[in-house]
Amino acid sequence: MIPSPIRKVLSSMQKNGVQSLLMGGQACVIYGGAEFSRDTDLGLLSDLDNLSKFQQAIAELQAERIAVPPFGKSFLDAGLAVHFRCRHPEASGLRIDVMAKMRGLDRFEVLWQRRTTRVLDSELTVDLLSLPDLVQSKKTQRDKDWPMLRRLVEADYFSTPLGEATEAKVRFWLRELRTPGLLIQVAQEHWRVAENLLEVRPLIQAAIAGEIPALGRGLQQEMEREIMLDREYWAPLRRQLEELRRSIRS
Image 1 (cartoon, helix red, strand yellow):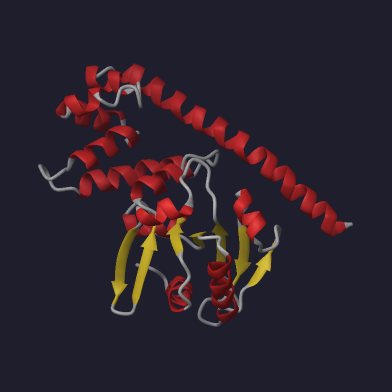
Image 2: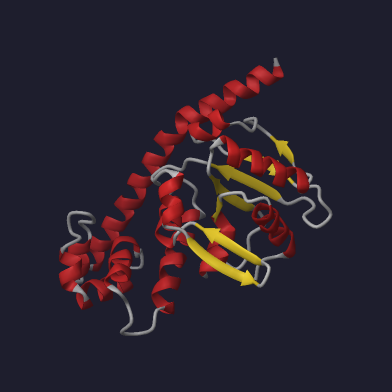
């Protein structure tokens, strides 16, 4: 269930023709990986026409920018997030975070082609990051993202009726499952597909063999590698934000 303040934000984006993709916690709610999220995170096409439409939606929501950076194409294209707080009575206090570029993900136009579209009711349709893209976006240095990633993939696995998994689904589970028992089960049931993914995810070999200790070590190393990559990606962006803060204070 999407809370009414967030529905107001999504409705404003839809009404103003903003090309955006719901991501973050609210996308996790729709995919069944979370029960609640307070904020609205959007991926945004950063061309000038779309940014103008977004500003119209933000004005309608009586939203004010908070923190740094300022709202601008150059900051979005650099990979920074811009933050807003809504003042409209129907969405009062709700925070909106927007990004145009995310680590590990393709450019927005490609993400848009892969998007998932859900009809929430007769008046509201929402475009989301595809599930594989949402899972990839959760490979961060934040502790809370890894349990969410695990739940997202498990929710997809358990919601798929027995015997109805497409090869694309199986490949997704083999690439992203982080639960040793489930990964072993899928790898052994679909060993031909699993063997074709060994170069992409070497730890699948341990899953095929049912070697739980080796698989556990591989999963831990995989997570540590992604955390390191995320820290390296954000280090220069954090320096840029700090420079902006200093320039504002001075």
